[in-house]
Length: 434
Image (cartoon, rainbow, N blue to C red; front, side, top):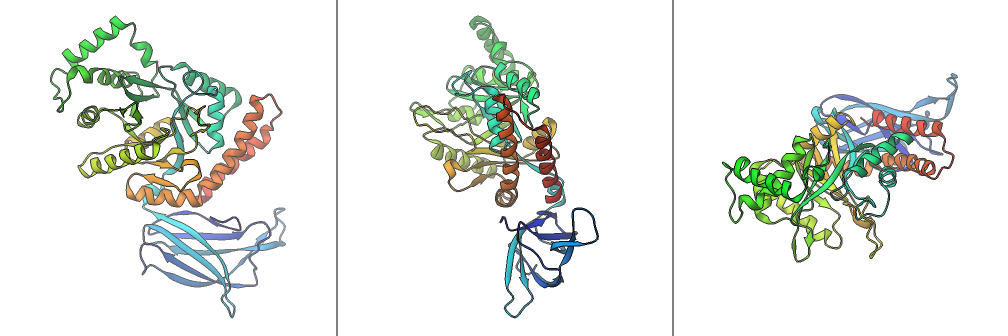
């Protein structure tokens, strides 16, 4: 993406004739008196190339008067026959074929063309557990880094997520928030999202919890085959937790399986294998923030994911920050790790339907390093394009919104009209880009 010329739409359906428009930004103009050479090249199919000549069209002044403004636009139609990325190079039709700009377009199958990408983080901590900031502050900072949806998931505490949702309503925060909490059993962790009540409180006292675990072993696991080097008693806390999350209408996501906790990984291998065998977990966090071992732990989780997929497992995946803000190292992992979901709309139903149907990609860019993504190949390739060509604009608008929400939290004046304009700009960005 460059900030000199703009191309829309950015994403097009394969096999359909599409109108493409290129315009100049700021002081860059496209002259209506000039003929331009347009070279279209597919990255994945070298025979799917085309070159055309086109005269620019004058643009109209904003007052809708018949007088053209100082610049123009180039419009042309093209059928993109190959899935993947295309480069569109614009040159002046002069003696030197002077290069003007090279823009990017991505062609997707019709099913994917009907979906939109949304950025989310479903593993966030606040000062109610081992984080630093309040729930509403973390929610607003989520918007600051470009999140469209998020969940507060404090350790064994459900009410902070409700507090965030309630405070977000008061300031009309443009962020889809879900209730959540992080559950642990032994050294293993599961993130509960969208449950209607606290799973921690459902445990009751120690005696009640022990009785419930006994019922799991004697009844629910009676006919369950347990993997090698594991027992029903060892499995029962995880089984009870995931079943309770589902009973409350929530989703259970396995958190940071290869995080190094003490001198061992957070999840033992037999538990991971049992979850895969029973297919009762809703997804796995394959990328996340687990300082100081996140690079190694993430790549181990990614390697395990691809190996399990090769064996025929269908595994929904997430990238989450697990942000706490570490006092000792002075680093905040918020914005380093996230999930891209391809959904019909930004709604609870569509977001989780997309995740469960393998339409999510786990992403990372730790501390400003290079971008990485994990997931199905087609979605990863598409996400790399979006990270370059769409999300920088998306995130900039979200960041400006968040600055105004932060002013609200500090009781400073904030323009609701300006917020509405930013929301409209983001909505128009999605409409123009697809």
